[in-house]
Amino acid sequence: MEPAGFDDELAPEPPPGEGFETDWPVRTGDIDPNNRLRFDGVARYLQDIGTDNLDATPLGKTDPMWIVRRTVIDVFEPIHFPDRVHMRRWCSSMSTRWSNMRVALTTPKGGRIETEGFWINISKDTGMPTRISDGALEMLARTTDQHRLRWKAWLTEPVPAESTTDVQFPLRATDIDPFDHLNNAVYWHAIEELLVDVPELAASPHRAVIEYLSPVLAGERVTLRHRYEGGALTVWFVVTGASGEPTVRTVAKVAARA
Image (cartoon, rainbow, N blue to C red; front, side, top):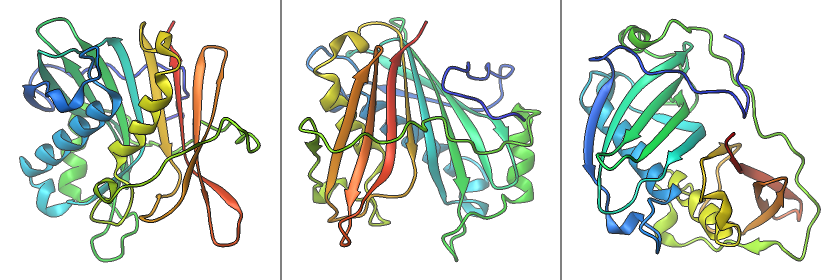
């Protein structure tokens, strides 16, 4: 399968009855002052349905550990409180060590968000990418005939030089997951913070992409270097180590959809 790019459309839904489905109410802790479901709320929903999906299948025992390398969120119609979110999750492409997992979020009031995550299977013993079990491969293949998925970064724009617009992003104890990493959903808190200054981006259909290059660890100093240009917000999560050399750990971009 040829790698996709930032502007590519996501794979369509599989036939009815395939994939994993669940639903729950939009919670007040996941919305902004305009009652809109925030990006970090969407990210938590994706984590939670992923866990529920594992628990509902043999994958919870055979392939229990996965990390996300990229998340794509397409907001066609924002989801607002109060409402109830129906989610459908399925594999849209795969290889022997990773897969693209699509999640469609829809609501009775017309909210619609389409997402896709590039998930890597991790060994419990080594903490490294490992082959997906035969049973899991068979299960994932039920919703896709794309079995040669390859990784290709979408967000490759070089990080800008240090700027007076840089924003510090202090980490809290509650931001850290069991791996001592910054939780995936917390990165979206930073995106939401910067979106306050460009509300037009969230006012019409838009795509948000985040790519995790390497984890941010507890206690590290994170700087948000960002640029709003051509109707797109790009954010680099920069960490300065003991050597004084800054490194980009994560890149995110939000742009209007045509």
